[in-house]
Image 1 (cartoon, helix red, strand yellow):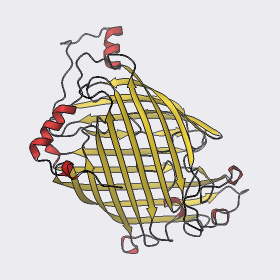
Image 2 (cartoon, helix red, strand yellow; image 1 turned 120 degrees about the horizontal axis):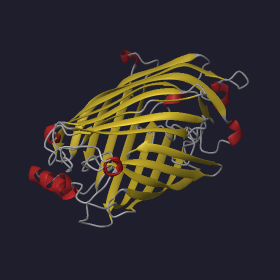
Image 3 (tube, rainbow, N blue to C red; image 1 turned 90 degrees about the vertical axis):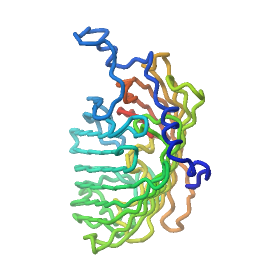
Image 4 (tube, rainbow, N blue to C red; image 1 turned 60 degrees about the vertical axis):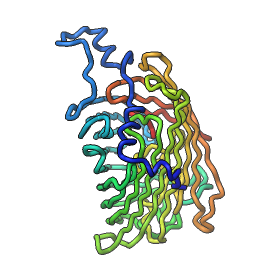
Length: 404
């Protein structure tokens, strides 16, 4: 599933530079909300020209909004801030970004997620980080792909995540490295009127009432990435393979391991035109645990991929198992010639294995569409408003950047 043509891996360093030049986003004649603000309010500026991308300059995008939690947690207030910047020559270095998305609602949920994706000069090194503190009451339905809706039960816990990885380029577009992952689920409890999580799910690891679940381990990472902007990818491809090993030596309650394989492909339907969006984006990932001792809240579940973007139209956490396979296709298109407005259409399918047979017997589709508003044309950052639906559920999501 992670195989790509050998020719792609055999390109020399000069090809890296020429490829970036070919797919560099063309901002000539493009408009964003910053341009609209200037047109309406006519602020006094020294120059009417926009600054081209350059090393050391930071491009901010900011979105305060009210939304509905994807897992049925009610209304929430979200403030999303993205800072994009180049750590080297923009012709040979990918766009780095740091996002901070604090949120809260009036049903007891609170979150402080901070994510970073940093490319050093000429893409010689890649540093990725994901740090979160969450107070996260959430519904769960047990294990398997055929759990009934009336199996819903509320699980309350606090959660600390600390993921860091460092990768070194070993060939053009190909990176390898190591990392450290920590998941700490604290005081896992269910509502008094519900049975305990272990009794309801039939799973004994990480489900005792009031238990703390601590997982700490190292990761081995392999990355192949021909994109130069992860916020809004231009045509290219992406493949990421992560093997994680948790051990009691690192402080884990139990030793367990997992494999996460993620593949994405972006196909331009208007080759040579880098000023207007007309792209077919494909995404698939497979996530599996290798041991029976994996804590319940660390098992693969829809919406709990590395960036919590899977399963648009499905409640987060709705399907959970010891292995999960997910696929999605999205069509992205500009509405206006200046790139200010665009739309997307998407469809996805989720399946998890059954706890007794480990077979994938049930497939759950979802789909929808969304509006895109260009917030910052220099970093190619969109405001994304998506409506997704599946059998018995629908939701609206707001965010900065694309889902994948």
